[in-house]
Length: 592
Image (cartoon, rainbow, N blue to C red; front, side):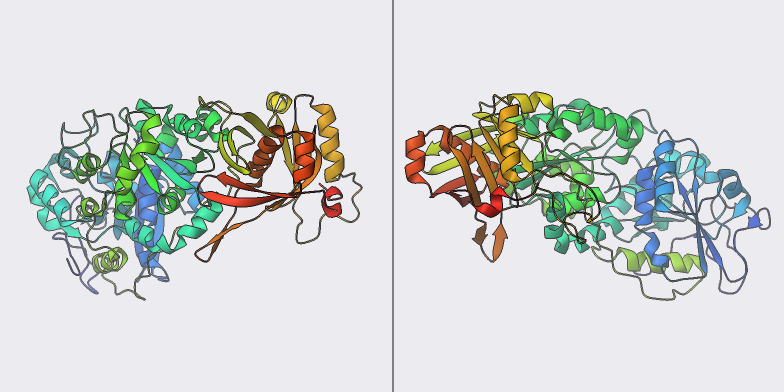
């Protein structure tokens, strides 16, 4: 709806200094002014972190305008207020107390929820959805069976319209609003979805996001969980850990995206405690603001419950797997219901690998089109509507949607692997799993000493990574220190760990010094995989396990006659050449 203006929007006539009567607005002069002459005051009331994140995607429409003053306030009455307050603090936003917000006349109130006491705020109000569409009814919250966000109990309190403008993402949402609140039809306009536009603007950053996550050539499987009793994490709390334990670590990376309300309800500390085994095995736990979106862009497959986050993944064309166990919340005929009906169903974690081809063969984008219209146009359309309500002309064109920042780049690599190997002459295939895997394995490989005493004492393969040099050099020149050489450390560890058979100092992504208890010292060179103008590398620790398996199956005489030798190592989707040579002096003396 080009240049949409809601009926009864409470917009000022240019230069009149007067407001038109609008819903929920105080009589003129009843409250103090929030901004001086020629200025406009925008208030952003926040009830949850999720609502704040949605509104932060809208506020770039005001970039570069010194006439606009934006203040935030924490609205009372939400179960998720604690995390909302923390999110406000992280954003660096200027806040005002709720009592002050109630006493002040605002030129615009920009909200993503109509609930609670927001109806008491004075000024024209704009209401945006705080998710992708209206797909579920929340139990014990509002009218039964009515889509959350479309409930007359909240949008028409006492029969009075709450908002002057309902800024929606699709014409079908206008029809849904008209169905449940006919009197609000004239106040609704389709502006698009600013969060989807940021996702679309981020697609060119996919390789960068995957590099930050350390995904490499692996398939990234992202689990998304909404909040509440029917969410994936509530119904199937063990699924993230089960997938991490069953999927080969050189072929798959698993990440978990949680609704911000789940962070608020449980807390980051308790979430980390509950998920600790899966996190130690490599599970990536997304932060609730922006990082979740980078993970959707980076994903190869999305496993979801009925939360609408998966609609964003569908709009990006990502294959979707249905892990929703059913219930009362999902509304029949909604875009999310149609997406889940289209997606293959995951009943048990062990089925995922076999149903991935079905998911990849199903294009979810047509379903997502029922939730997102005017793609790429949200900020320009919102800017026109909001400035019209403020009685101003924008100082500049609306900015382009911003790409999401890369994930934090935390090293998600596990410190121990249960390893299964298969030998066929000089060809060795390697599959690695967490130590708690139910799979049958060949040996345990562990990082010394990071993996902990139990793993270090029982591992057949131990490794340590050399320190990387900094821009200032390998070490402070005036600091007293004692450093192991690779040869010295590998010998010491074999004496220290009687059950260990192979020790490896990982010197770089392509070089290792390996010491075997029966066969002695070797230099290992792991060649990168080159195809299609790209260079990919396997984890050198996987190559160490491959060499260990080959050495363990051979006699000392056979090894002595074969070395130098080139092994072919398969790990996940890659097959690379691994050279096993007599130890090079620079490897023996490499300082760890």
